[in-house]
Amino acid sequence: IGYSPTGESFNLLTEELASAVAIALGAAKWLYLIENEGIFDSAEQLVQQLTLLEALENEHYKRQISKAVLQACQNGVQRVHLVSRQTEGALLLELFTRDGIGTLISTDSFEHIRKATINDVGGVLALIQPLEEAGILVRRSREKLEMEIEHFTVQERDGMIIACAALYPFVQEKMAELACLAVHSHYRGTDRGGALLAFLEREALQSGITHIFVLTTRTAHWFQERGFVAADLDLLPVKRRTLYNYQRNSKVFVKQLSVSLKIKFRH
Image (tube, rainbow, N blue to C red; front, side):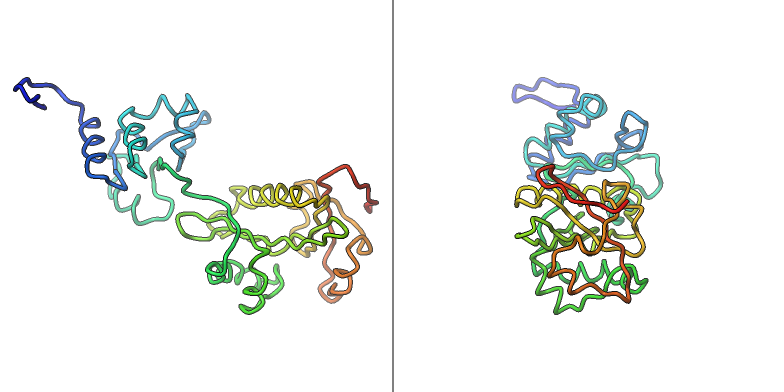
């Protein structure tokens, strides 16, 4: 119950009161206990995160979200966690596990793709080390990575690097090598690698690159599923061919980003 300045009493919804308090306090985070597990998509799968824009533009999501939640986000509350009150230890699971158990609605992207900086070297090394030890990726020293970090793009989730890839351009040939594509083991099977590849393809096209190539020994099927086709070694730029490791015997795959240049692929 709330009271007006003249003494009138009003019945207030708990969620509206909580939203108003969070806004007045300038809270960065509001944890809202609800009856179900969170927000669900049209396939009845739990949506772990939404930006405010996504919540407002998608009618399916918008119908499931309290207006008080949207109002809070629109008035300075950066994150609202929708968590089931039925789950034992729900608050601890939501706050102290990276992906939580409910739905996070945030005013900014909880997960995003960006160009790497020198501060990301440690995170990238931690990500690629298991794949280097398994022989999937070529080993890179910290010094080499520091020198080449400008070629890297990372996918960051709540401050943690969960995927990375490097793109080395060969401007004269209008080609670029995709290398060191890696996804954290906890996030494989969720097409983070596909999203990162799509981002790099757009970047490459904007830079005038018409073809991307990759050298791989283990993951040919993944690249073929995404439009890469097998090609001969002599298709690579001369500078890259001179660095080819015949002992590793990597297969060459190329993806054409533009129809402006025709090249001959091996069938």
